[in-house]
Image (cartoon, rainbow over all chains, first blue to last red; front, side, top):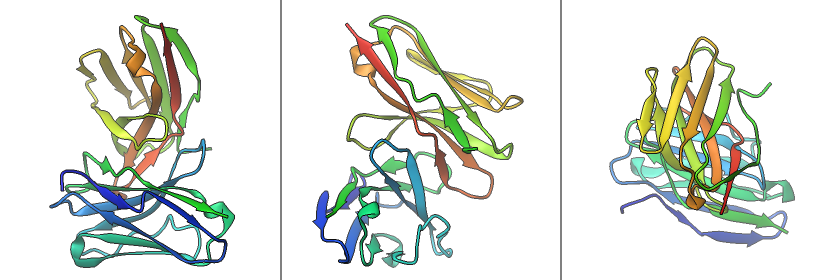
Length: 113
Length: 110
């Protein structure tokens, strides 16, 4: 597609449930990033995929968070046993080679009740 | 200390005014610098890269001072549509991830 596509755009879940967030990057972009943004806060890095290299998971806040990228394209961010503090907008971005021109998707707004 | 620091504002300016934002970064190994714009409840969008020699794009001018480790953004002839949060963004050598400041909010009024 023309841009980075994220789904769902909104997700309300009960505390303790697992959620999966999907990101479909721009075709041909080898680098893919997940960030999250809490209300009124800056963007917090979560994880970075570049081609076939091992992902940089240094930003994942706990072992409840995991992400994978299948076939070098679509990525799924999974949050297990969601907590209220997980409520945020989860943003995905992709870049041609990781050095320039990151394009963000419109995000998934996650609310844990 | 945050790796990228910005004055959160808000900066309230009238239409037509010139406004400048500064941003400081702590990692001297930082190699690439950007300004992103984020509208309320929207995703960030790349406004411009910041080059060592300084660069201009229409009403926007970005400058980098490596010695003092700060980046600036100047907006001339402000428009109502410039109202947004401006995010200072740094990429560090070898890490290939963007580090975002918390943003400076600009409000342009008629």
